[in-house]
Image 1 (cartoon, rainbow, N blue to C red):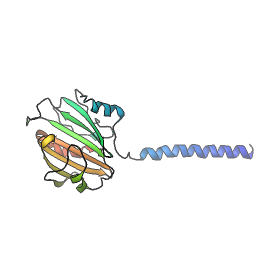
Image 2: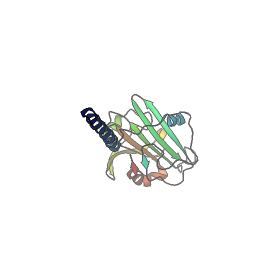
Image 3: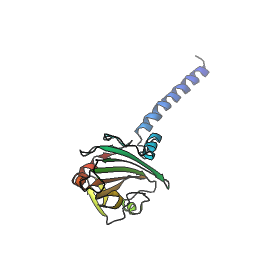
Image 4: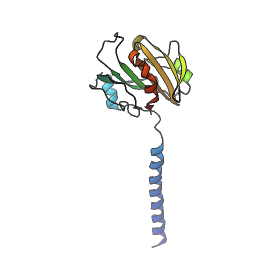
Length: 191
């Protein structure tokens, strides 16, 4: 083997090792923020529902490990505006929006590059589900969470949110019948 062949073989081996090492390091990296596919955005725009509702992985990149029983349908929600992406899923039953026994759970991930502190949620540029009421900060599991009583468009219940990591906000709205399970729901959410 001449010197050129040796260098070529050595270069090829180095390139191969680099190509193998880069994907391995990259695969261990956490994605910055769960984002919806084009198909999910279209389902949201078309207001399509899932009967029965999806399960724990209804939101791509998010796992909701505790979903209470009793839901009859679900719906994905995608909203992009002002440089942020809101991506969530609503589980609900067939009761009227004004029925206090209505069971609904809304989990949303917001990709908001400026988010880094819990206090920012009070002025977050969300189009639905803002923290505009009397808020309290509580610890649920290992998370510090901002909560308030749900009202208005969200209906009666409890609304909560936290900054999972820089640029990633998670919010949860549980209707009144589900409020006793809110701690389990929040503890069970994994990104």
